[in-house]
Length: 181
Image 1: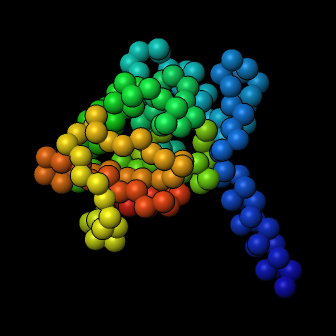
Image 2 (image 1 turned 30 degrees about the horizontal axis):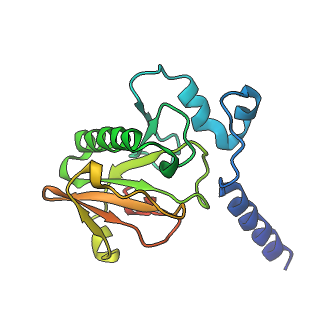
């Protein structure tokens, strides 16, 4: 029974830690960037002002095939970014994904309740062969400029089919599992 209680506490602690809706990271106050959830904010501060998007290899050893695309300017979420900044992020992320995975690329954004980092970022990886069959609801768009702005800080993922993009958003909080680890 004690082991079960300990397990419940650990799971709940992980869930609390993963919620970045009340992020306190503020680049104007460097002392706030010391928190774990501000790690990508610190990385953004170490980047030159241009280009507007930079890439990092995911440091999680369980995700050896993943990259992250991040806007250089501080942004907590995609909806708070300008449409031009989002277009730059999507365009750069898709180009990087294609360079890594050819036609098998995928992009994923986790929802605020499950993200562990405050700085907006996009996961880049190889989309799993079964991903679309397991997630059949999607919107078809012609390109990065038409990718809808996420609502309610939920997760979504994107991949190419022919010369179109499929944007999958079903209200979940974690979508990066559609990408190869």
